[in-house]
Length: 434
Image 1 (tube, rainbow, N blue to C red):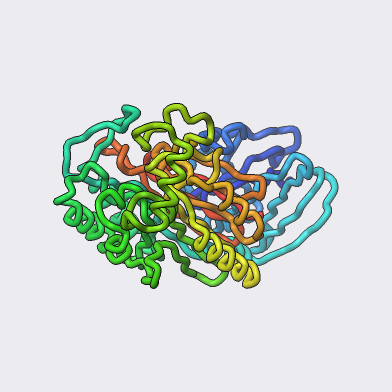
Image 2: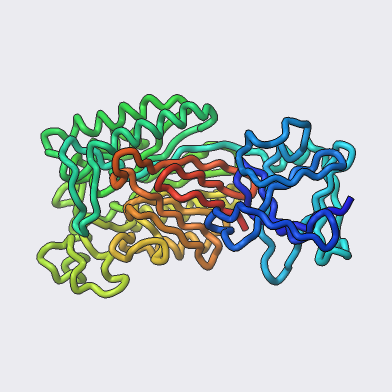
């Protein structure tokens, strides 16, 4: 039996997808029909099942189409990272007598290394460690549909339906350990006399999630509706003497999540005489010439971030973050940063960035533990991977889902990657660790 040479690529857990560079029979090339996945649309893909000595080549992605046999491919998510162009390493899969043999080769004829694992061993290596739900910018309000300042349609009442479908799907999945909402629970256009009621309606839906806690962070629209102290209480943010809204948690051994407060330095949410308000006011008056400080008109490039609906991370929070990351590095933990405001200029429009994103990034880059940053705020979403291999994912907003559309997802955590499985407008991505 001739073994296929396959490039190492990221595969969806639901499918077994292998890009074949050489088929089972010499001189014959298998061309597939599964090139619809965005990151790998340039590849020719096909499904390959190895069952005993008989390779089965299929062209249907549905897991229900797989042969109902005791095949290793039916049970294990084979997720191989694509080899970089310098190494050009490929992997050989051989099913032999109930074992799978993994080999790295530099060419079809020369083996560099051979390892052999049982089916059970391989399943343990690539099993899901835990999963969590993600959703952002629900921005519910009991008002007619409207538009953003830029003219994008917004569906205020429908947002509750999307949120309800998200929680229902997480519950039906049955193995979602917790969920995170990335800020802006209720829209700023919500009548102020209805703010508390609207917040309670959204939180009640999150309370119907059976898997575990739902973690929250503060967004600008949250602060348009309720003061910071009240938000900390209803969001169950750990209490502190200084009223901070940032915190961290450890959902599983080896992983730590850090929730930042991008409105720590802001004119929103604090008492008018608070030092953070005074600093924010000074910054805005020094940089933004507009009478309406929510307007970026006249601000070029990255300076457009200095608007009132954004904010900054204060000195005390930066010092706290440095300690958390230092301790995480020493403990060998992988860290996921959660922030309402995007933290990288290549992941979102400049008008949506954290004021001092550069300071935050510099701090993240000093430590080797941060693997990804998730955020909301920029409703159309975005992505980049920075110079230190940190993934920056901006999640798509619920608010801009027309009736029948969705924007939520789950993240499956493996030993070597975060696998975002988006629903509707939310884009699926595989985020590998380095």
